[in-house]
Length: 425
Image 1 (cartoon, rainbow, N blue to C red):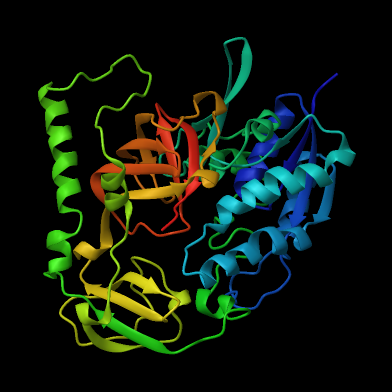
Image 2 (cartoon, rainbow, N blue to C red):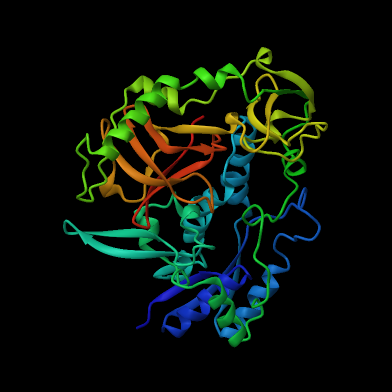
């Protein structure tokens, strides 16, 4: 008897080909389209959230020859993703709704509402892979990077659990996008030439300030420019940087004994004070810079943002380097290389540290070397992870641009995503 799979059919080419491949592999496939959002406030006119997608999805299901159903998850989506997003922006943080959507909706609520179909698995069109291994007699599910470097999407699934992975299938993770398109064209699927979706998961491409104004009222405040040559950058983190650089230099020259057995062990010791110093953002004051203009609400901006400032007359473009939502202030700096845009470390609170691979969970006092990314499509960066009682500190080999509270940092080893957590500040 063939295994039954529910495919989250979105109307896009990726999930369409996922459904087709599963049927070719002998699975009993059922397509289910998720309605997650009805309100079009702030959604750009050319990007309809779902009413066109459902037509494409049904046409694909008919072409493949599989049953098609529609489930409305909009109440759960609003409560578990959109309300969270508003709350985070109100606090001056930068959430990733797509990560939350996968954890809370596609691999949780969607699992629940499709239980009536008695399926063995749920499949999506994500560009990532799942591997199964037996470690110390136990079955372990590994979340692996997809083979297409331009579409690799494991980062969006960085909050999944072992239980969620056990029931998930990713049929196109081994393929490149152009191959997926080729299959869709060959099989004459309606979605073959459909453009990839952009913007917030299930909502569409939005004008963010207008979208956020559904709950967050505009509030005029001041913008202050911090000069690149500020003494803040001369002294902040100086001692900790010197200590870290010395350890890295010692490692390179063989002065410290590194571990090359593949157990992820790091070698650079850092004191608690140094970890806190390197991972803390600079706190700016009005006296540190000069007034340059007005904004309509600090909660509408994030670190590294350039658009929407509407301050002209500068030699180089202005970028947001800090926000203060309590006092409704924005601090900016000129140029993409302004030192205020860069940090060596970040902190994740203990209750926000999530391990996909629970068997590799770090304990307080442990440190390991991994590769880390803090946003989708960012190249993996070398870093040392330090687990402390109060949480995890991630210290990068090279300073990172645009670290913002609320973003998810995800850590990898040999192409496997091991864990993640929301950046505290």
